[in-house]
Image (cartoon, rainbow, N blue to C red; front, side, top):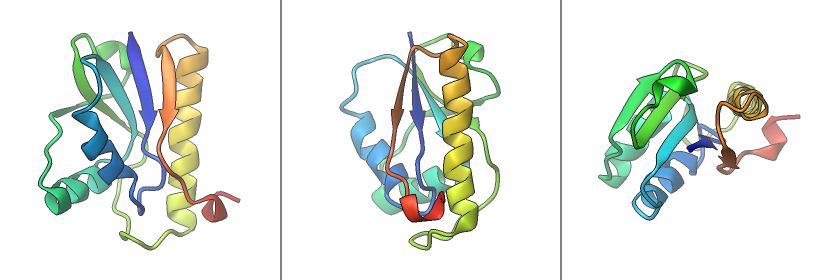
Length: 119
């Protein structure tokens, strides 16, 4: 099974939630839909590391572990949600939902978003 996780708001606490929660997840194949920069920033901030492999398609995740489909590249300003971060949140979700509807991932969980920025 492939479990999808959307990163949520790349300027908020989502990446930290991911890092802190990852160690509590059962062993499995997890595909994160998001951006690399917020995850790297959260790793520096928390000291927690997530062994993450970057892939382009869910089918590349053949072993258990954590994978990233980088839906939106670039950097975001931590703690400052804006139109760019809102658009990124939506793109993460759209890509993950498409993959779920196509049967390429088996489940989908979303991390926190800034609702004000996705309108």
